[in-house]
Length: 231
Image 1 (tube, one colour):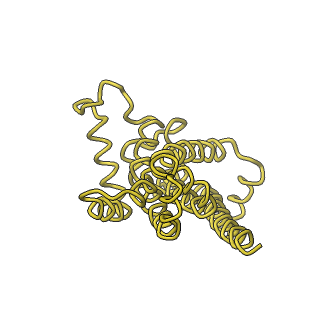
Image 2 (cartoon, rainbow, N blue to C red):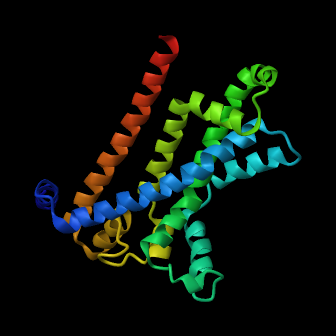
């Protein structure tokens, strides 16, 4: 109980170390989410509306990548950015940039696969109308993205929830360096192993609150979209 009380004191008093870790976690996840959304949303939409040989395999691969183990992603990015790797000359390993790259690799398939499911449903409904109007290619992709913006927002929020809770990949490529690459999940693991439950509990409470907020936003967006649909 003493550790729990001290943990809430750290949150209430805006402890500098705690909020440094929190800010880095949010910043890394938001940058990764922005990049993943730019890649994943058009990719998922394009796969939903375009017919080509191997399309079903691409969708199958995308869905399989949704469950890719984070430690495997971390290992792949580590090998890519290590000194002996093809991008080792950039010196990105054990930096926030390396963590962003790992999260992009991890959550882009999630956003792309979920958006593919959303747009494929719309495409089945509107494909004949778009064909008769001559709306194809980029115009069709843009139209679907706008029309499905509320459903796609939930896909993006799902990606953020996955990114902010990630530990395996970011600890491999980030190294959990104090004041540089230490984020909430890696700090919780470290502080728990050290027996410093106060900071671990404080970070855990903040992480849980963020997860609840993301889920509340998902529900709110869905309800708002339903109201707009039947208004």
